[in-house]
Image (cartoon, rainbow, N blue to C red; front, side):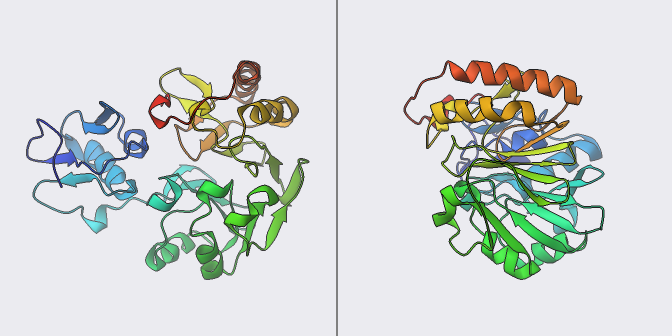
Length: 296
């Protein structure tokens, strides 16, 4: 695979990069964006930066973060990475979910729930299980449904999806219906949020964590909550209505999206920003799908 123009010996990003932003989230000072793809800004220095590049390499769905003279050391694979006491980032993002992030949520009983899925691999499944038995695989929408059944079967877990996207996981064990909130487990609430897709759902856990799928995310460009208005498959107007109906019900500190940056803020500040996003989305109108217009 070709190196980026001007690349030097060491770490580089090859030409398979699909600009999913995953590597830039994990190594923000080392990997940047240029002309719609990721590039190395400089070579890592020291253990911390080398660890960031390894995280990016093991998460990248196209395996585009490469070294000119060696393969990434399997022993340097950091996933799953703890983001907070009860949430881990799975890494190993899948091409079949457009490179989406997925998460593991610990419950008070010591069991785990998986929100969306990494790429399928038996060894990865065994690694995730070391954190605790996985009882549920929660899908946020159709774009992230790949591998859901395989992980659910491997864990003997229940697979959840909304009826609006049921054709993407027709063998789901639990189907969320309508637009009213549904308690899928103690203190874990599914909030249907049609817009990005007809069956989009976000999950709020413990009034602390918001697994938003592709409904909204934190943008480094605007330093605020944003919706992916240029990649809305169903209806931006329906998303506006969903946010208006739901925003006041949502209390959380951690925003954990499928695409875009994660962010932790005090719950009151998150609520203020979510209300601001809700107002802004009311003014949006349908537009052609354009991946290049995403404001990472």
